[in-house]
Length: 407
View 1: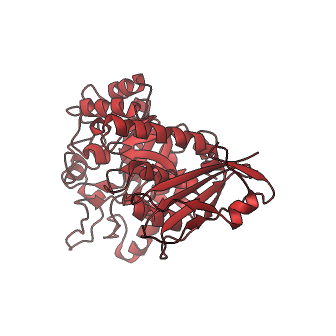
View 2: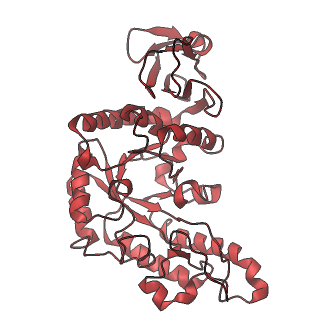
View 3: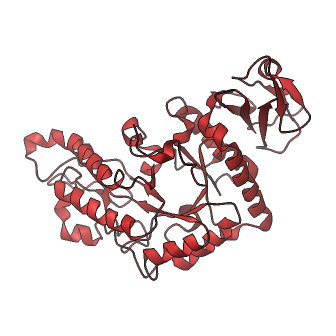
């Protein structure tokens, strides 16, 4: 079992990630500016993504040098975290431990630590190479350097990334006839690193990423209570991604955020989609209008309200977004069937089409349910067999949420 208290004991925080807000072009002043604006959105935690370490202003350099760049983070990490904490917010940080840039102090000191088949040009992706995780000295370096960062400040969350597929599977410490062992040894080495970092920091929430959904498997979920589903943040595409992922993994493991992607999709609809998993933002909060900030605050509040239903309940797929249809719907139902959250996104508007209904699942047939704390009350049987009508005359990509409570 995963040892993390975040599996069931602690609610996942609403976070804002700096990546799509600033990419690598940020400093401590910019991060604090984002955090202050995000506080008004009901956000609990700021996550500092790629670009905070070594010489890292683009994706050509710096990977492997896990030392804070104090030209960007003036006064060091400890001071920045204290400033974020003083706003009443938690702090998270990004790592990509398995990778190295050729333009890095680590590579210049230990080029033999990077995997490359002798006599061939290295295969590069995102301008980076993979470290030979089968080597004990590589593992020791990562354990020491990353633990030093995590021990230096009050860090609540870590995003653990890997942004390329492995190639050049070759270790300089094994003979040619033993190179078939490298991939297995690599994963065993990675497990050792994760044990020495993750399992020794039980109070830190770790999220796996892998370029968004890569290496999303039970072995990784032993260490990470949640995983970033995909770097494709378009909310309409996400309907399919969440649908497919839910066949194998519970929604509590699915990372989902609101971003600028999907410019024609209303902010409220983006929030409804992001509530199908852990909830957060990937945008520059300092550039939002007062109206947008208020919408985000409302949606963050709804996520907290519905959290026990989403994370503790049963999940039902009410429609298949891969089939032709006018809407995508899903539902969360508490184990005792007394509460439910039914979500709908209109994906295809039709002119003068038939009345659409969404039929619930998992309710008690002869129990009565109040809808959205209003006056309308229907039986579980009516909700499951007749369904709820969905408004037809609505803007494109509208969404609906129905909170059902047994009376």
